[in-house]
Length: 323
Image (cartoon, rainbow, N blue to C red; front, side, top):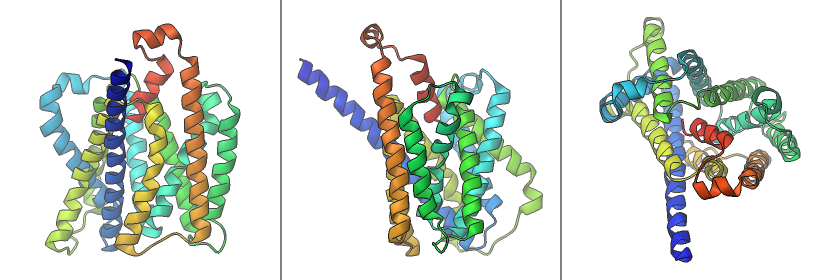
């Protein structure tokens, strides 16, 4: 009986991992499409507009009828959702701009610096305990980034600076996501897309152009909204089957998809030193995620485990990470 129960739990966990990783890899295809489009001369803000408006069209036509408008709009703090939405669109525009200047793999690597920034400020801003392995992870991760942005490497000083600004913005976005963890993941996903769509639509007259694109290029531009929506949807499904602590280490597989697509579409591969730096960043984040997961399990009381209740901190993290 116990063996049967274990096999069933493992099957559910693997299903969650599969959905989550598929969502992450689909985000890499969105990044690839965006890089192709900026290379064709499409303004970054136009790409972002199609991405957010397409997302909102799908949310209102597919999700809202199933969930209900009142349920989808219910939030504990609208101002916090608006702050998160502002940071979300800022991060998107910065990252799309970074993709114009940097290979996909290196641009993606900058995103993984964001958790290191959060680890540095977590004891003060999130009131989390100081943990020695987090500080080791920060040091190792930044050592890896120094290899990526080293003088004479594949990135210019300006591109590296933009990458760091993007990572800081992404860290702020992740922190703001934790602050709306009491809201349903779909609600948070909806407000983030809504803010981006409204803000970019209001500014549309200032940046709209009519680029000369072929039919497939227009299809690629329109598809950014679909790929972003499906990617986030798959991640939400993943978190329904598996806890955040189990899924966090698999986030770093996105480096593989970004590298593969960069090579397949643009013929870009990191050199040996840059690849070593990216590996250090991923290793640092992976070790910290595993150590945090073990520490979280050790804090779970037998009574809580027996009743199936999730500790408050873990529940907040699950909601935050599934947005």
